[in-house]
Length: 115
Length: 114
Image (spheres, rainbow over the protein chains, first blue to last red):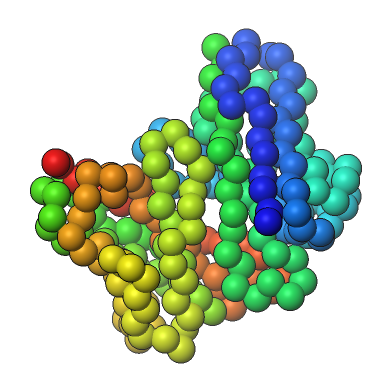
């Protein structure tokens, strides 16, 4: 069976500090991977998605970047955090080629507070 | 906007009652999915309905889809306190290709009072 891990679960960082959030998937190969941000009481904003190693698509201009150094590893980074980067960050995966329905499977999320 | 729009934004009912949430959209879709999110947790996939389907059931869940009106509804029958959560519709549009991208609505927050 497939599992998705995210860490850390919570993070408090000062403005201007760097950020690295990690997401890994087990039990599948060549997944599509996604990073979302969710503001309090709001819907999901897609930040980045990836259909393969080294292939990153950005949905919105922002202070963040993403990388996919391995097939099942997706990293969200920032060189200098802003207050507006606070939020709940969710990683998700879906079946790659052949996964016609696009059902997505979510990790537990990381609560980021920038002070 | 292609985004799914959900109605109502918040719903409060008594245990045992039925809860109905609606999702409207503007794009052409391949399928529409519903997800559930407990407070502070990730989303969990509930049910998927394809564009050529009109109704689907899964346990106490009933989903309908009207592509002519570009709307869907999620019905939870005989609700329980444990159903308290946020519910999101998500669209797979025709243009998503093999990216797997979904377009999520803003969600309906359901509170079921014991």
